[in-house]
Amino acid sequence: MKVRFNRWYNAILTALLSMLGYGCSLDEPEEYGPIVMEYGVPHADYMVKGTVTDEAGTPIRGIKTALKGFYPGVEEVYVDGIDSIQTDASGQYQLKYEGAPHNYLKLIVEDIDGEANGGEFLGDTLDISFDKGEKLKDGDGNWYMGEFKIQKDIKLKKKP
Image (cartoon, rainbow, N blue to C red; front, side, top):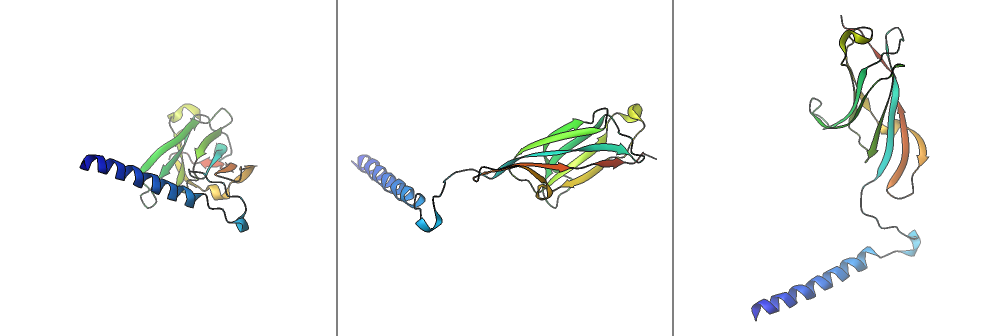
């Protein structure tokens, strides 16, 4: 008897609470116009591109460029590797990031081939801020914010 009562009690309570939540979430005041209800987070398509050269301006082939996220205040611990690529014969690279706007990104630049492409170069780390990116495409007015590009040209110094 007690089990049967608990089942009915839970079913009725669940139905009432779901109707209450549904009714509150669909409330649209006319003064604000129609409201689109979505679940998720703001996201966009980002592109980081540029050219890696030596101090004389000569493009360097085979330099690893990696986009990584990190925790603020803990710069030595990288959280997630987002994308990486090596520069082509003209020293160019292009990295893509699709997701939520990430304010804590770094571009890590490393010489991984040693003397093979004109000498050994010191690495570099640059902060990436998508707030300063060039907007290429508008968003849809909801969660999708559009497409952005950041140009980062890098000059590497040779190892002593």
